[in-house]
Image 1 (cartoon, rainbow, N blue to C red):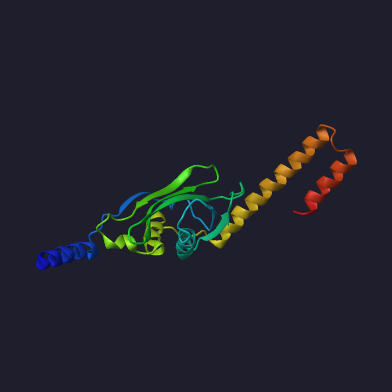
Image 2 (image 1 turned 180 degrees about the horizontal axis):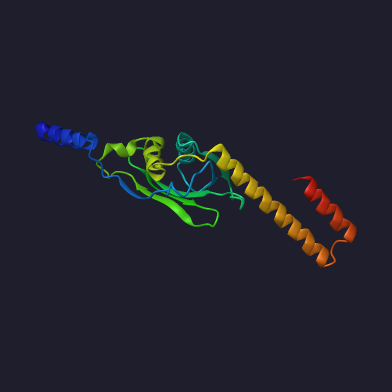
Length: 197
């Protein structure tokens, strides 16, 4: 009887430690020819029990030369936004069971996504740290990604500034047209905008 139990334990441990894994990964990788990311805005999900997930993602993005900014609510000025959910499970200890990650562009369109599920009950690799699980997932999500060049970032920032100037100028014109500000106030505000270019 002891031999049977020992053999069974060895088979389970051997299977669990083998390279064979039943990790499930559904991935829509980033189109790296279209999107070159330097900063990503992450909407913090306070409902996620695993508090190591967010730092693991930030660290994984950093490996790809992407800075992360964490918000309760992502501002509309962000070019790229990341949302995530995750579930933890308990089996002798707590572990990350599943995670869903979506990356959006400025138009709020999903441009990349991942659905990760931990290995099944007999596989001891399910007890790996969240970081060990998330790093390869982010690597696959961003496969082939290169950050934008300094010139591309400067051009992107210049465009944002120009749009901001134009929208502010348009707003004060509308206020003036509606009679909500005087001619003198309009002239001062307009000149102030021009001086700050």
